[in-house]
Image (cartoon, rainbow, N blue to C red; front, top):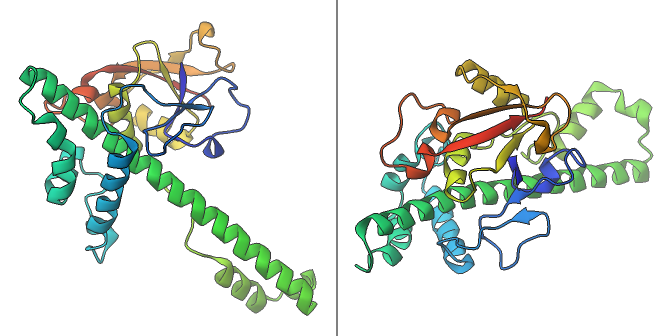
Length: 266
């Protein structure tokens, strides 16, 4: 399976670049889309997933400065759980503390639940980003319609003051006008191995992420033609924690220790 990385929504991936590419679905909604891949054995059901996201939103609202929140930045996943509310931690561990089965098996299930939680947060983040983009586009269209109604033509728009005013009023704070919102790809690449197979390939079309991997010393070579990737695609196979930029193997993140294959299309 070819799985888009780090995006989980088809709107963010170049259309028709790879017809067979799938998009990871962490199980937030009741039903999955045709182009999505949702594992059959996700530890958290949609109801629990929604509750966790809502708790995360409430947790984040207590921070005046979003930069203070151990949400997605350079911190590790462990930092998030330690700083998060007891409600989030309890929901992640409650169903695995029943005393049934071997300890190793329960710990594995909890690790997969935490990995799913990271992917749920990333999926929800993309949803909000797409909503903001759509909102800003509607605001711009509304301004354009108003211009026509007022008789403001292109020559008027050449006036610096008018152009600046229109640009300011139409900006909603979303990811547009050449701005890009950085997705938490380091956390995503460490979480995905909990749900994908040995032969699955993560497909990346982001030049900045590829550059980051090259800076880490990860060597890419021409991808196997059998993968069905476009000409010129490169591939590398490493433990997920290496792709995440860690210097040493994490002892408490089992999925991150698994090897994954990443393909880059430039």
